[in-house]
Image (cartoon, rainbow, N blue to C red; front, side, top):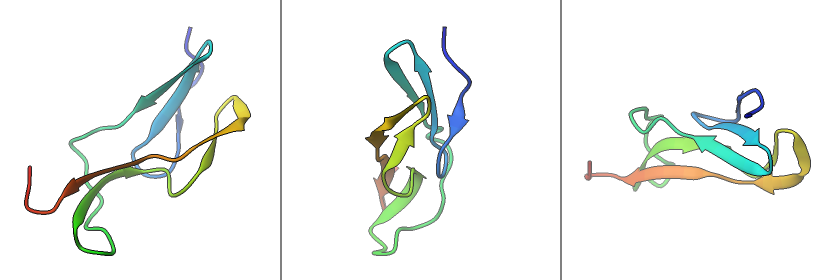
Length: 70
């Protein structure tokens, strides 16, 4: 059974189900254009973060769409 979901950064939700990490990203959301202007940001942890419930494990997630594509 999955533990409580935790939102990390922008639009990244994580939970543990036993030894499995579950990551949920809502692909319908956007957070503007990246600093370079080449990508539309969908989700990001904002760098490496600890996995909820297993602080010794780190994860970094970036989800983006190139500008001009859908």
